[in-house]
Length: 276
Ligand SMILES: [Zn+2]
Ligand SMILES: [Zn+2]
Image (tube, rainbow, N blue to C red):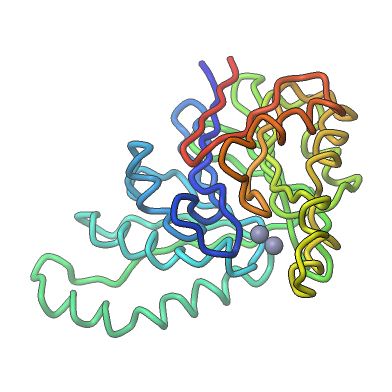
């Protein structure tokens, strides 16, 4: 048994030719879990050998557009690749139901076209939405998942997911600054995935709107300090802001390693880290 995380998208909200938007695949036994649905997620899933019908659940950390922009593609691809109505389980903080209903509404014309065209497709996409909050726990294909509060204010609510199978833990946080809920989320985790910014680089950018992002994201150093404090084994950094300059991955890794004694993973899309 092992638990793994694959970075499906390591990019930021700004477009990149080679980094998709934030999304992470967690595999834990029979459970294949997608956390967030950033730009290009279905392409990256395919590259990881997973099609949407292979997903046990989709978990959303928060409803910022860069984390949900391709949810519609997951929903539609799941729908057209199933031979019968199979619900796609979508779990997220309060507001998720409204977002999913709006996505389905956006796809009304497409659904009408496809149902009219295919005799064997007489039903609209099946989704099962579950809204969760801190302290909630549920099971996904034999893996246990707990929900933890994170701090991305003024964006609220935001959560992270701790996915455990046979004593192995993958903790996946979305955008957040260090906080008690985040410490709980990743306490003793084998793998801790954290979205990060390089505040030292962002502050040099002559753009007020970009400067604002320093308020509500963990810096590389803060993610490393959280990992150290929580006794994490492997820290996996993602959602790089600004994009990592060519050849600079080692610099990012070293910055984290200056605050954290465990393994640090930094890499391109489809980088995988495994425990167990
Ligand atoms: Zn966000
Ligand atoms: Zn984000």
